[in-house]
Length: 439
Ligand code: SF4
Ligand code: SF4
Image (cartoon, rainbow, N blue to C red; front, side, top):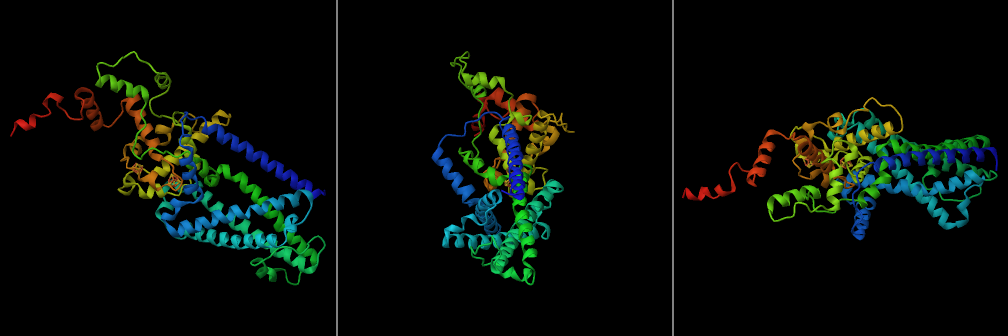
């Protein structure tokens, strides 16, 4: 094992160490949320995950973008199988360790090259679409600044990684042709063979230097990208799977009831009911706030949703409140939840932030946004990874109504009527059929 192998091993260990540390921090943050059971019906959950996350079924609603996304996703995942060989070679100083597989190895290398080219082209098209065409959902205020930079950085990263891979392959092929020691003939190079002209006329030493440069660039780039994921919306390539597995399987529009509140309503409706019957759920409910004022009042699934959001804006494009000029954007609800959760986690870790004392409600999400929602569920329907912004909106509304009695006037009148008359109207139940007497 030479010095370069030791350096490589050290880089690998550091990359894994920092990635693990950040993943554990995200996991800690997610489980700051309330407990919720999302492990029922495992076979339905597996099917949902395979269909939505692996099969990308909801991405295909927009077929061109969906197809390009599929290429990037499949290509990027499969090409990274090749990283295994690079890591083994990097640690032990071998070269193309899997070449003993013969024809199958040639097939794999050829497939990686074709996929690398397709990923590179798809990322360039995505970059042009994001920066050249003024698609409304990509130029909104909430994605200005870091979110836009993040999206562009991901695309640039992928283009550079794929480019370095193809250049590395081409330099390798040149060395194979030159009969360089260590570079045994192996692999099939349908794409990189067209780049051989780059190295034409160069000495073996120069080509070797290029090959090493692209090799290091490619693998260090992958390790850097791995560590960039926890800070980026690109984390969805990992979290889309648990996120879809833990999807809400209830019919859309079914609200979650708090047991203690249901019990109260039952008592109101049924004078025979035992007012002293207290269940375990009631006790648990009493210890928690009604609804959500801050991120710790949300469930861990809602917090995982926030980390999984790809900031694609499909939810906002479909939102009728947004379309009619209201301030609401379901994408912003998810982005704000993640930002607040990160700030909350940073405070737990002793990292000072300017927004320490701000809660999710009012500090990040305004009441006007929350009351603009029509609860139509178009956002949850449109989300390609089954994120549910509506559930966060409803929990925050529940807090305003039940903890602060701070609902809009029209709703407060309706609540009073329900309480007094058992119906949203302003007259008692006994008068309900009075209209009939008119005839
Ligand atoms: S449920 Fe609310 S946030 Fe979601 S699309 Fe409908 S109006 Fe917009
Ligand atoms: S919630 Fe879903 S649809 Fe909305 S921006 Fe995030 S990933 Fe896209």
